[in-house]
Amino acid sequence: MDEVSKHRLTGALIWLTLLVVLVPVWFGEPVHFDPENYSLSQPVVEERPLVGMAYRSSEKVSGEEVADHLKINKVMAKKTSGESKEQSAQKPQWIVRIIAYKEMKSANDLLGRLESDFDVSIKTFEATGMHSVRAGPYLSKAKAEQDKQKLDKMLHIQSEIVRLP
Image (cartoon, rainbow, N blue to C red; front, top):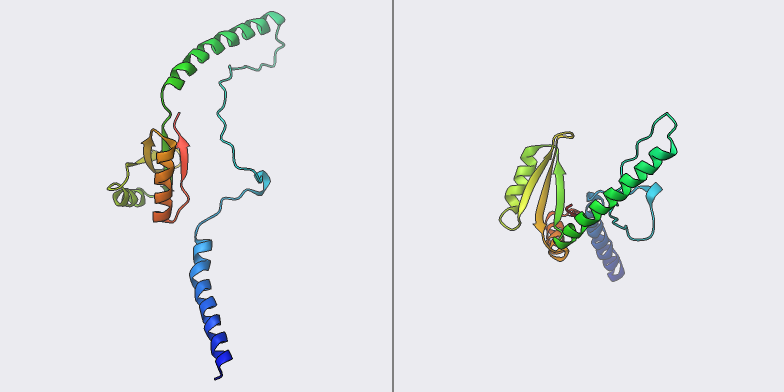
């Protein structure tokens, strides 16, 4: 076999090895893509404002009832503005949602692996039967982001940071 063929065969083997290793890694993590809601900008996390309750009725509403309802909304807005000042005095807390399992055994196994290095817990959702493994709470988003990156790298997942209410 001549020298050029040896180099070509070696190159082909290197490419084949890379593909065998990299393709499963690329397709091993699911991508949550919704084509209808796709945008090129970064996702924006918005806080929802507190809105007074509005009741709809099949009956016609008089002008006085509307005025009363508006007065009630103004009073509620004043109350909630006082509450928001108290909440802004408190520091926000953050958690890292790592992964959710259908089986409690799987969640406990992961909890056992992580509890020596992280403050982890399991939250069970009765309605769906899912068991969510979470890290935190953290007082700073920077610390939560730091642990998120460690967990993502260690577990080969895409966890997310969530602000606690």
